[in-house]
Length: 319
Image 1 (cartoon, rainbow, N blue to C red):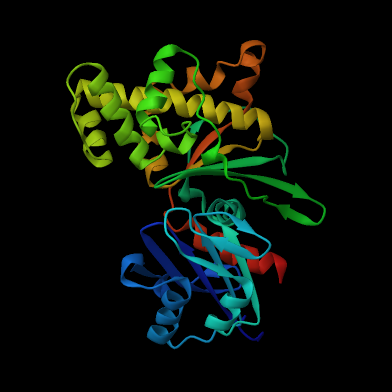
Image 2: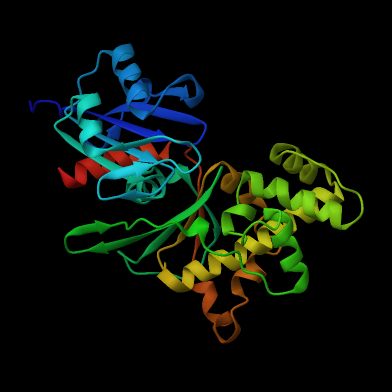
């Protein structure tokens, strides 16, 4: 009987919460998953040590995903002043082999390891050959994306920071909206509109523009959509129009014939409305390439812990 694979530590650091778990080979042990409030900890290393103290685990490898840029083995959370590098990750976990990924990279590595019931198809697209490029778009506290390419040496999932590219604006009204999103202090980015706080800011813009200013949280807006509240529905229509435009741009940049995958809490929340609120029309609005845009399937990653699976898959692939 073969010896069990050594345990690995995997973690997904978000802006507010962090999940940490143990994995055996490429499989996350569901019972080992623990969730921590970042505000209760001093930093990434301290939080990971807390998990190891709680569980008594001694991992042979460790891989973390974080919502922020990763460069040359060092990562920094965009919406929280925490950072770590490979050497620090090795020291705090005692692991001999370590990796740091952007959170969307981790989702990209997870795609082949997720069960079928964790993926829901919104638009079928066209049939693509095995190994076709794919694209993950994450919408939550922030926005980002990662392309997934297959090659003879395995998968390649390059990092990006697409949430911080300029928000597309085509009309004078769009420019007024962008000015509102940033208070006029800088140019508006994709993340300023396409995120949880972006949904709230769009609602504030629309109600202010209509002469009835009203603040609402993202959950309240989505509840208003379900209840048929006009302001909430108009907010979602604007959000999905912008998402369709940005997703279409990203699709043309990466040609993900294997599918576009929406991830993140906001991505999952808006996914049921993609077909009826203008997403498809904005996605396809690419001039001469309009007829080309139905090539890309669109799916939703339903598993909220997919980044943990991706970290485990990354360690299994690179081991």
